[in-house]
Length: 259
Length: 298
Image (cartoon, rainbow over all chains, first blue to last red; front, side, top):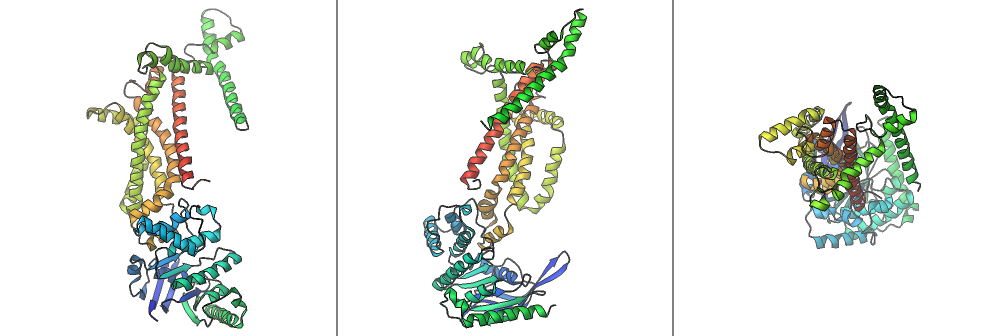
């Protein structure tokens, strides 16, 4: 399995008003093609920071990281990934279709292809028929689906998702989790997914990276034995509960050695 | 009806207060005149006289209304020099003078708005401009416009530029500032996550400006334009004062004060107020249409 993302001895220190904060300490991780990797941990553990380093939105202080074999900067310029933020962040003056076409306009796709691609990804996230609506006319869950469509529109191989469902209620979140798995299955993308929900991480991932704060670091990496096809009620099986337990243990262990 | 009643009530209160003030402020002159003539006047005679003086301290509302009618409709429709009989606006009508001021206002407003937007774009994109332009812009507004207006007129006149352009420049001088302040805030209004999003697309600074910063700044721009267009009108009127009362609302104010024609001054003030209200109202209407079309107004 080819490595899509490789991090070796990655460190990142923020200089803040009251001293230096080590957001990432000696992070080593390789993510293979087509994997679904979740990052879980309490706030301040560096999970979002790691995603932002992959996206070239933060610069590491030391260490090495490659994305598709390139530096994060080169990968960003090559538009190697789509990024989904915690807030949908749709532009209120654009329709849903206009929002999905935004990256395509910036990347210089011709008009006809922009429409075709927007139609395709909006169907993929089940927003067909909402092309002409404005963001405020959609629920929070639908807005987040539109923002996922926007990240998918230019067909990057990597999808970086930073707590995309964190602001949504449990019922909507369950549905979107199911849809996301289906989408991952159909598109074969490599997904890096930040969350602070244990069931969400276990339900979605092929691998779960457990992180802990001060300094932000990886404390455990758990491979999931769950099959690729996952109905929602897989969450009641002993295998699922067993992994969830291991994640919880990992989070607790990470917490204990700071206190 | 629910909207008309409060407005009518306030207007009625103002008119009542105005008439009371008219009597109070003009009575001294009436009594003075009567005393010199050795006559005694009753209170009713005093009240009647305060509202019909030729050069009152404060003209009564109906005097101002009559003057407005006389110097607009009556002058243009019935007078020999009016547009109906001569084909051109009469130089004694407020419509003519308001148009002179309005054209300078609109040219100045256009210059000020374009300059303000360009400066704001420069300030947001260039650190040197960010640090250097804003203090100058603020300093420019602390200089009283009445002091600098004659300088601009004189300097431009010596360069052979006179007429509308010098007034428009004074007008632009007042209107660019609110546009700069509003646009800098507006261009910086996108959230960090929205800017990060465009960075992940590897968008250029120009694309970021066009697709995100400019649309996001529009509500701020319109708020500034409303302030700016009123300031433009003030600038144009002030610009007319040092030119020796040739034409425009400012010229009417100046000739009125030369000859103590308070009724004429008040009529000109009302003309200015009506023009200002129309201008701000027009900007507001464009604002509502634009923001609604952009989905920013529900």
